Length: 344
Figure 1 (cartoon, rainbow, N blue to C red):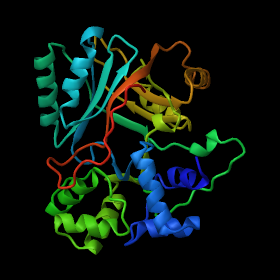
Figure 2: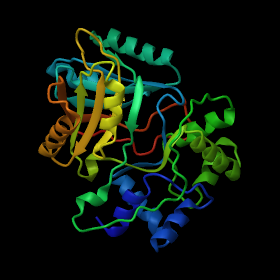
Figure 3: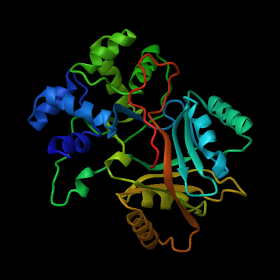
């Protein structure tokens, strides 16, 4: 990986400049030409290291989403995974090492559509899915500090806009906001004036597009704006969902504490589904090697006093689908670089 690739991947995962020529701003800060930035990002996206350059939305700030799981016999897994992938509302779909071996995320305009998709999947497969909507968010940030994997290499993080840490619920009420979200959910075009191109597609002026995104950032609807990387393609091949059975009166305090560890990328509370699923706290840990992740889990247990808490580590073995969530049906902009991997 070149220094330019590392900086583009590492420094701009958030705080993307909301200006007329954002890639020119990146180029100026990195001391290269805008053409070089656009060429490099295009190569990274084509090669699968970048999913898109665009927005990551705060869960439930618009639309509705849930994690779901199926217990599928091994011989039926590929076929049922393909069936699940067929729903545009499914944006992540993984095989994990567990009795419940197919895990997927459904995102739709509202809870009714999410439940409809789950009902259809149950009817078509004959298997009842676990319904695990998020109840409490302790930490969600799928950014990756790639500089850590480079021994002796220091990367200065460059911030372009204010990081928004306070979030408020938001209801889509303006057609322009719906259009903006529909257009950005698959990523910006890698051109000199991406907001002008996006605006032309949906009938908005460039300044209105920029102002609209700035408002969504300020309101917390957009959690972060920037380069969205693919962890698997960047060497984070050990992907584990660690689930815990925490007493209900302790889950919030422990969730905040666990979410404060810098190696935990996701931490949230979801409902138990007894008697088959007793776990209510979910954490995601990514590492370059399986043993690295297990060592981090052991560290969590020791430092948080979780040695006697029932837990399981569900490593992913295959990624059937990974793309940005679709909050608006039939967006004008076509999906950008959606990929399916044979392994995760």
